[in-house]
Length: 394
Image 1 (tube, rainbow, N blue to C red):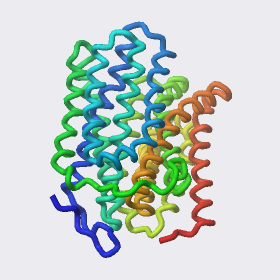
Image 2 (cartoon, rainbow, N blue to C red):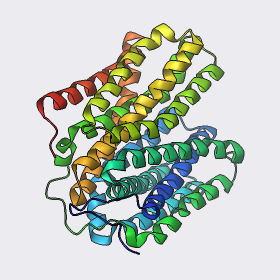
Image 3 (tube, one colour):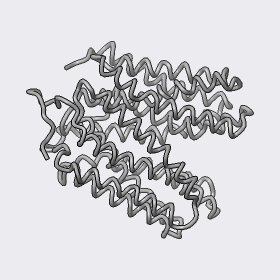
Image 4 (tube, rainbow, N blue to C red):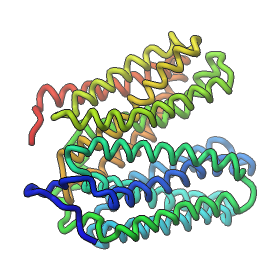
């Protein structure tokens, strides 16, 4: 299959849908499996009588695996090829998924979590690199908005599958593994269109964390707020005397905002010569929305409206940040920077829940809002600082 047509500067001239569909479909299948697996594994461990602390420790292996897998993913793709590395990661993830059913000893779940999330991290990094490379510069925001929307739908379908399949027997594990293996089909079909890494990155992996800080700091804030905010919101809501059903509906509304805003934000970002002011603006809205939570929590309708827009702003940091990264780099540098991008997301998912939970323990329930606002405020300072003191370079 031919590679997408490019202009004299090496930029893709128009959207090459077969390549993009392959990468988006592959990672969306994995998203469905992860959405199914997270509640499934927690429920099974709870039924086995495993203490909550150990369940949380086992879940933390996801972040550790992501941080360790990110630096080596680009090296593997350079050595074996992007599509080939992705297909290998699909097989590893599927075998790990089915392995949970046969692992009767709890300690075995730690290496399984590590291999599963290490493999899915590889898929996320290389899928996003593929999408960024195949997207035309003038349509990058739109393409990444479509990617983020489809991925969000995939994550939402996972829990629905869990509610239909339950947690008994091998069936939920088998379905999860089959869904993951379905990702092989689009990758194999478009394998000859996957980007080629002819050279290794010129810099050390950790240099890429700071090379485009407006992007990597955005995904760190997104990881911290999404992981910490979503996991602890039910506790915050219950302490504020909301019913469990009300808290669940509010989380659903936040998820709908996440899905609804990605394509519009991507389209709008394509009209900008510099995406950094948009990123800073979304973070400012994040600060305002966070600080407004204690005042709105007892007005359900206003709370729902705020969370709808707030969810869009939070997830927009990921989509627009990734588009900003793709606009600044290409080739091996983009692949390495994409790995650093996912690394920062993983760090955020580890730091966020711990920081927000500690804030709630120290200063009470209001610590939830203050901690969320702090992560957004941290990013506002970085984004505005880069915009003011580092004018956009070509």
